[in-house]
Image 1 (cartoon, rainbow, N blue to C red):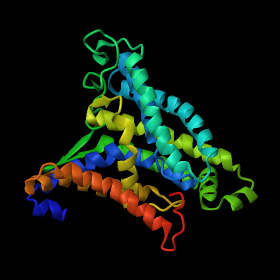
Image 2: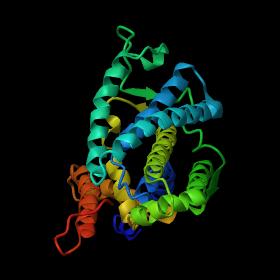
Image 3: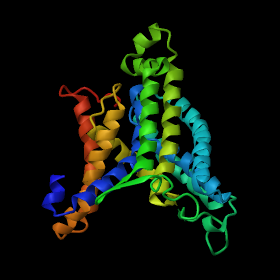
Length: 327
């Protein structure tokens, strides 16, 4: 917050925006936790989950479902699609032990061109989703104003002087965090963590390693699909085609800033990391303007996003020249 004072930015504006961004992006960051705790690594295949969420929302918009009903329907359909995608994704990762992160990255990058073809030929009928000329092919950006835009943001907002607390959005994020926390306190969650910490010991305990890894991938995919629904309703738009391709990297950076450690990543890491990461994002624009170099904002964001991941991988590799293990 010292940066806001130095840049002479109203503290209320920074806090208001940071709270919205925390909950808006937090569920996407939360989706990385199951795979990390299962020892698979950072889910750089997050675009797979995002596409599942986009499909759920597109179906809802196509059927002209609005309000809270529309949002809930989008989340439920996204979750069902994510279970299917996650099952296939998990099977692939089980076949590439030790190379999960790079494999997930290329799965995500390869999946987007396939979905681009789908968006261009999808048989949706709502004119608001289609190109106005020709009436075929999905628009790159679909507005949610007439559907469920800001349905969580505008639910029970609390105004305290200049501060506006989006209680509905924060409550949804808090419930998501609580569910993940409770899951990892359950027998299944502890078994999943055991797999991440020591596969040999977990196998001796009778834990099905492959199933736990696949379950972690499914959970990550489902949470990610729900996360993009939360993000889109807060943003007010659905972004298709290449938009989901790079979403995994800011989420990974946020989690690493929060102090994530392989096999021992908690909800607290998600909350702290997301808040810090997006607060820095907020301040990057005014900082660039203060330096009279507007392009610096995007440069700073890219340096922050990729630099944090690189540092974490170098740190995980240790000082003895050993290969970097899965995050």
